[in-house]
Image (tube, rainbow over all chains, first blue to last red; front, side):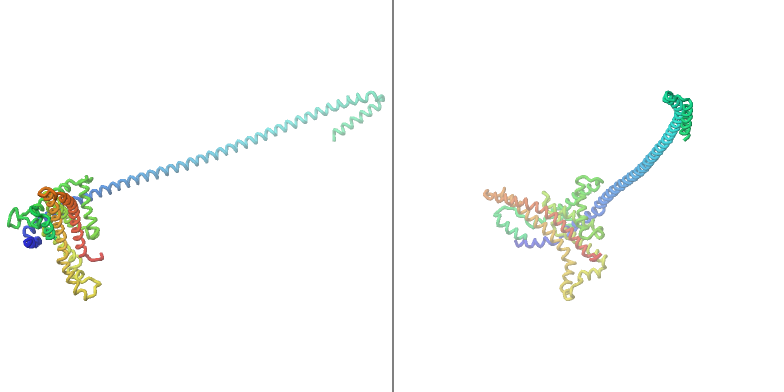
Length: 175
Length: 270
């Protein structure tokens, strides 16, 4: 136990060769990490980051292109839509124009037909009146002869009455 | 602590149980005896661990691809962890950039060296002499002095450290020597001792559990003692896993404290 205590102190006394080997190994290990290991991994990390960033940039570019194409397409679509609606409006206006035209033409034609009918009706009426006047005179005379023939023996009265009747008729006709 | 274990183990073993001891940390020189380049078991483990680490990480870095495989992803995760969760978290990106290689070196080297204690055949941490943690602590020491002098100038740096603002002047009589001691001795030596003591005690406990298992399960004459061997084996398994955790944790603590000490040399408001 006594010798052990002495040795226990020895534990804490650095030996020259131990210092030498600790330092040599520390220098080798430090040189390895400083000069090779970490720079190598750092370059790998940087390269990876650059790749990832490049990929992201590429994706962003593609997204932008796609957005632009979409915008262009939409613009084209909306102009097409405007054009279509304009064409539709024009067609509708033309159609209503045509209808209005047709209607007015039909109306004039109808009016003309009505007027013609009116005129022919009037002439027919006149013709009928003229022929009626002539027929009424002969009809009346013959009728009067039949009625009066038996009663009117006196020729003088007869001629007076006939004259009287004719003048009456003429007067009525003139009125 | 060592004595306690030695004494406790001595009562357990009547005769031939092989006890781990601090001799394990003072192994005989096996190559170039007596020269400054003498190599003992621990230094041999250290050199071997260094070669393996440099080969594995070197090949990984040489073959590093833009699209990482599983192993490369794991290595990159560790690099990112040191950079973001240790350096940048403590000192921010602007200050931290300069120290990323240093802290990466400290963390990865100590991690590998600490884990050697749990690798069968090596069985001792490559950082399990006082010197190796001390060398790393001295690196930290140099860096925080350089940072303080560069950022504030020597006078300003010492004034800020030894005479902190907002303290009534009589307190300085007590505080300034403590601060000086802290700056010169406590910081590097606490780093050193913390790591070294953890490696020593971890090795002793683990070796004790396993050698007790060997003794009680195989070597012991009285077979009634065998169930005790099962218990020590279970304890050994638990301690093994625990020591893996400690190895990682101590590398992390060493790295984050180094970062914090350097950061303390910088002016407070940036």
